[in-house]
Image 1: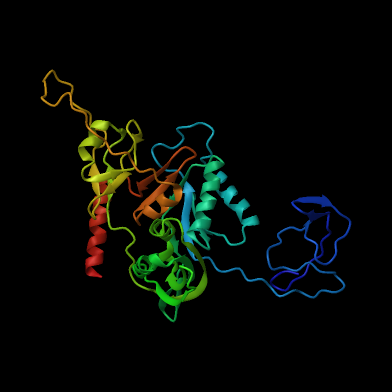
Image 2: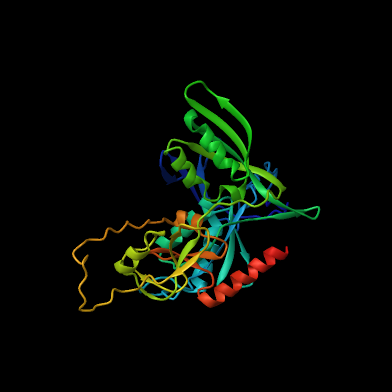
Length: 372
């Protein structure tokens, strides 16, 4: 019996009973047995399998609505297809997303009117990051947008999803955790001190406030904190949340990263790239020490002349670059940035690669914000 009340007949073609960690064929099963059955098409969670002569549906299981969405599409960077054997076409990406929907009932795939990209909605950024990581390991090259929240309009006002966040942590981190969540528009709902050195805190936080929260939380608690969240429903828009203070360092041309350019620039920024790594115009190569973005020439080479220098024999020290994982890259990306995902490397890039076009778009956006 389906969730909409309609019924249809089907025949069980195979019955597998679970014993310990293994499954074996069986002819029948009784109450309390854990079984797997085959022979049903288009079945989903919450639907009832019953005797056709006695159809009494069980209470339906409700799956929480998606709270976070991100755009997943084919790789559109200049370095696409550098390695043979990767899966590059839109048809391959769409078939893989359709297969994911069969076993993952918490996901939704929404058509956004583009032939090479789709909006994928899920319960949280971690679930979506796991999907992208699995596709990366299967050989896909993807362009992934920054995670966004799925909003609703209630009585003409924008509402966003909120999460009920439960945290268990050592009590010496109480102030730091409270400050961290206050910056993300969270409000404390309850706090219990067990008297054992640990404290339990409950917060109501906007779902977008939890984007990038996990990494900061683990850093703040030095890996000792435990956090879990469940859906709290929709509430009015909580306002602007600042998640990253520093701007991006963007490559202004294609080429190969040189140590000479990195040494000259490292005083003002931290890098995500290594020497000899290939870059392209519009690729984010580091984090600026200031709040605005900066375009730099990371491929600049030392001039080879016969002039002698008094410091020729001195060695320059170069700070090692930061290596961002897929989840950290999704957290770092701003609204005008996206993440290029390949089986070998994860890169952050601007949505608009051309420097001139991107500058005009940024100026136009600033004028709109000033007039709003």
